[in-house]
Image (tube, rainbow, N blue to C red; front, side, top):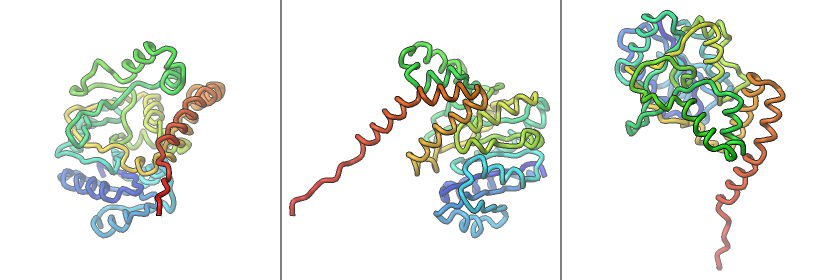
Length: 291
């Protein structure tokens, strides 16, 4: 088996069907298995997969295992030499998967690759970044960034490869987990995703640990994919925001220490209070109609 594609799904039935259709129509004669892990969706996703895609392996998680846990279920069941971690809100264009597989075949020092991505309207996504530092967390999420705006802007330009147009292939530090083709042996070596991170900073963490094995991560501009970002996250914005802060602190503690995580948690309080007040002000107030 050359490739195992793992898709972790939560209440994105229509997007999932579209992603599966694109995979099946573009895989060619590649020896390829597709594994869908459904995190207890309530929209009939699992039934749709059984009815429309009988050749796809369906794993029903029995509850919401989040992004990391759901993907780990699929990755541990995978048999391919390469594992494609893919979001359900994606559409692979013809030749994309074959191009990524060929790139890994031809570059043994590379452990994982990601394609060029666009939004549905064709706008290029400026994904891939450098590993974030503790200073980047302070500048991005606390009043430190307000006090030092030039430093924040300079760090953002550096973090997001501002001088790179995404039209050329190159090595990167962090590739998005929305579409990542990796050597399964390396994923097994690092024990897959860290399930303490539920939804966010999962790709930063995974790529850090892959790079520590000596593997490189490359962006392959010749392979292309359409990505409608955050299809499942947009359904529960308040829960998503709460998990974002939790994952940020877990990631900070893991790579910068307990003291840094405590300091960041305290400095985040004004940001979180301000965002909560904005949500409350935007909430429509009930009106009384005269009878």
